[in-house]
Length: 224
Ligand SMILES: *Cc1c(COP(=O)(O)O)cnc(C)c1O
Image (cartoon, rainbow, N blue to C red; front, side, top):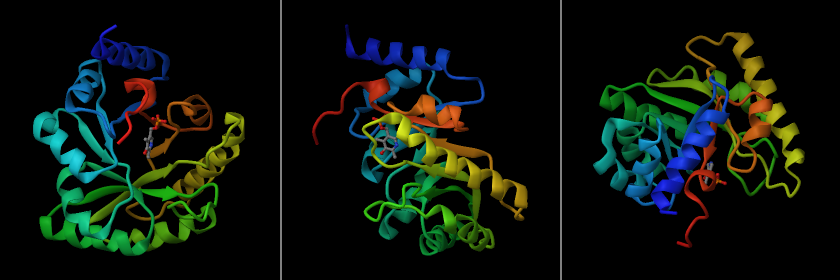
């Protein structure tokens, strides 16, 4: 079958399968603009990008047809581009990067929606805030006028056995609800972004309302 047909079929099948309240985000790293367009043609409304350069290239063609989420690790020197291009940054993992996003957004007269990335597996080699520290950083970032916290994101550790991911998703959902209940001014806990191609079902069972799917839509990634 033609690759674009496969992509369209995968998106349609996933959209039919997911509960109404869950949004399917296409994780587009390493894909061509044509492949991303095929996914959009089949109903994708959010595209997730890990790399600013790839995002710029795709954005030039696709533009405001969809919402763009940044899901890579945000470097300080890329913040300006990120604030220009993206509708939501999912990977804020420190007060200092939030401050930089705030500074740039303020200059552009924009309020940037962000998610806090949670390192739910407490893995030292990975980015994200440990679950114990999330509420504190949310309180601190909530004082910045030109960023707005709208939820949490987590990757979870790599687990051979998928069921072993469940506790990490559950812990992230618990902290999500806790922060929601504490009613911190100007924080709006709406989005919980968890789950990828292999784990989205478990993530949804544990409360995700955004799932980020790459290979499940586009097929295996090419080597880069
Ligand atoms: C690549 C990526 C995904 C999607 O991964 P798949 O296993 O291909 O579905 C989701 N989230 C992030 C942050 C990614 O980098």
